[in-house]
Structure formats: C-alpha cells, structure tokens
Image (cartoon, rainbow, N blue to C red; front, side):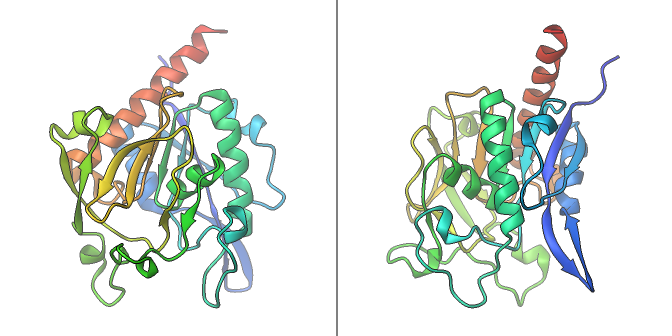
Length: 253
C-alpha cells in the first residue's frame, strides 16, 4: 500500500521572543490533510536557502502559502519599499529556489496569495506593490478591525476562464472568493494562462499549461476548505496531481 503523497511547504522566518522560528500556518497544513489527502512536510526557509533539488526529489508536490510578509520589490522591478512594509528575505530566497527546481522537475505546485505572487515573479512577471493605490483597481485588503471570519469571508466575485480548470470545477463562469492581500499581479508572467479575473481587472488565478499541475490563486482556498465545494475542488485536484506524480515516480524505479 502506497503512503500518502508528501507535499512540501516553505516556512516564514519569524522572530518570536528572543529567537527566530520557521513557521507555517496551520490552516494550510489542515487543508492538505483534509482536502488534498496529503502529508505535509515543512521546509524551513533559510538564507542562503538549503539545496532545493535534494529536498524536492523525495516529494510529490509543493504548496506555496500566503504570509504576512511581502516579496521585496527588488525581485520584480518594483522600486523602493516603504516603512512598515514587512519583508522576509529568507522566505524569498527559499521560495524562488524551490519554485525553479519544482518547475524543472514538473512537480505539482499550488501557490496561494504570496505564493501566487512568488510564482509570477519567478517566471518573470511583475507585481503591484500596493493594489489599492493603482487607479481603477479596488482595495483588496481585509479590514483588520473585524473578526477573522469576516476578513476571510466572501469579498468579491471572479470571472473564470471558459476553457480553464476552475470553470470545470465550479461548474460555471463565476465564483465568490475572499480577499486578503495588498500586493497583486501587474504583468502576468509569460507562460502563465489566466484562470480567474476580478471585476476590476486584477488577475486572481493563473496556471502553467506547460506543466501537469502548476496553479496560482490570489485568494485563500485553504480557509475552511471543507465548507466550500469550490475551494475543496482546488485542493482535491492538487491532491490528485500529487498522487499521480507519486505513482509516476514509483513506476520509473
């Protein structure tokens, strides 16, 4: 009997008290277990990053999570940062190293929020450092004063590409999603294909048609994933891709 597929999650480098910790949100871990049927494997983010190739050869998928920090603007021609903009250089270095190696291995990748932005930047795309400051775009940030259930509640609709995966999973051309981000996609990277767009024109999801499963979403489908058929479908499809990768790897031995 085969083991459950192993899925790596890069961590955030966070100072708690007097020491630095490698942390990952429990909601991502639970979504992998409950909705994708996978075993989470925590990958500590260090600078310089640990050898990505050695880590990923034994894994069946990669989940790039959201985070409190933002990608440093130097990685995408975003100009200078600003006071109070949280950064995590170790996360940047580790995530980009893992992404490049995962793409080369054709490893299934699900990239969420900051992870979607990492995917876009890794492939040569750019970001809006502050979406709310761009004329014509809405404010996609959550209200920090309301309960977390409201922050992660349904915020706006996205239009789903007619020929995309998500329209098939949703069984329609629109879906309601949450919205908890300050940065967003500016120029979509060459090689990524749009899966979902917000009504203000911001790209909210994209995939790579050159790979078996590489999908980025700007919202948070891990939030109460079992309560949303649409969110559950995203993780279920990712889990299926990881199981197929695992089987292919075993068959090639």
